[in-house]
Length: 618
Image 1 (cartoon, rainbow, N blue to C red):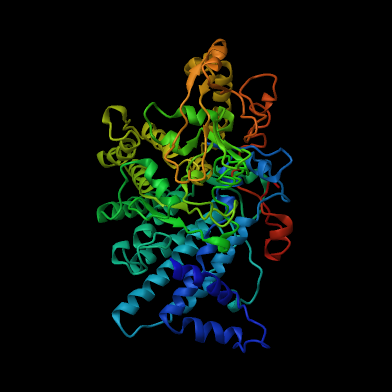
Image 2 (image 1 turned 90 degrees about the vertical axis):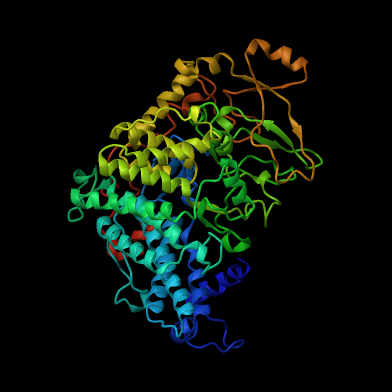
């Protein structure tokens, strides 16, 4: 990937028409530079395509838009715009723009690449195969960017022509169904142009599209296109027309499920991708930049080129600045009932959710301490699993997974269930593979998998939460299934049950004190083998006894002092516990917040084609 790193900056400047001062370098005109220099041979064309990749991702994807679910919530103050977005408090002024702008920037880059690559011809088969692959990559990037726009903002401007060739810079909203159909066709074309990963046309890294990942993303887009979304009348923009609905053509919906199933089956049948034996290894490989058979597509992060990504900083574990790991400041925590929802023996819990953090010490090595449940953080991108700190505390150079083979298996199972009005043997087997790996291959712990349509769909919905937690899809997955409102309501109800020690929470309520031994760090504790911190669950009356034995005590129902979310407690009254009943998901309104408004100042006021086309509820 060293060549890729060098090319990104050059390609980005090329695609935006960057020119140096002529006093120092005599550059040709922008038009000549684009048409005659960049796309004159395959190597320079590759630089341009690589330059599109940084515009496929933005931290809003996993940050404010990755919270507000049954998995993850915000710890920031209610006046903070990220907390507001995480809790569905939308306005036309706080609507996020980072992801929106990044996606359109990437779309402009790919529009240029697609336009130019379609006209390039090679003199030999090897070079033509490379050109085909580059065109396939550009089509995939553009399609995935439009998926991100549509799933968060609904009907959006749809442009497939380079800006330089347009007669106007203004564009109106286009029906999401039209966009979906177009990008699905593009993805289908891309699967014919791209090579399989094993062919090595662009190397072995999974930071670029191959036929493998293209099929997976095609399946994802098809499932979103078939699913529910918040819709309104694009002719009147009447607020009374707002409704959660699928597209109106049942035959097309079925066709979309078939496209998804076929795409997943192509990956499965090819046999190049597989589940790793241990769930933990998936994320250790990502942290160590090892490419494996499971992670099929990930966002590569290298130094200052991707300074806006911040993976592992706000969505990692707590680390005080006075530690060997330096500062890590998570503003996202796991919902306590999500952590407690995993079955005994499910190895994914302690990987996905980290139950410890690092307090600072005078010698700046640090001490590992146990979290309270309200302070458990995202464990998939933890700073102590890396070899080093990266460029800086907030630039850890941690890749972010966009597609894993387990997701392909779960999408395949879901699509087959829809096509057959119930789970086929193939669907059950696909889900079972994911569950079996979660329990280390112990089939006795997999449990009974329902085969009726509704029962199997619920099983898929829950399995995706356990398997793909904190990977950026939960919020819009809940929308496409049309269960966002019920899921949020159930999450709050479960938290209240936990606070009162009702039902399955009775034991932890009675013994919600934890006795543990803090662990001092050294300067060589990177790539830590620790996955979770052991503790003994005790009652309050046993606290003195265990303190006398040299244990530290942590109330599991309280946020950890010095760590994130310290003011939150799990209680139905007093101690600032109103976050569960009044603050959490406080802006949720059905048939309104499933789609974000467009930012008035940064989007609508700039694009006059959007005048009068704001989300009808705003």
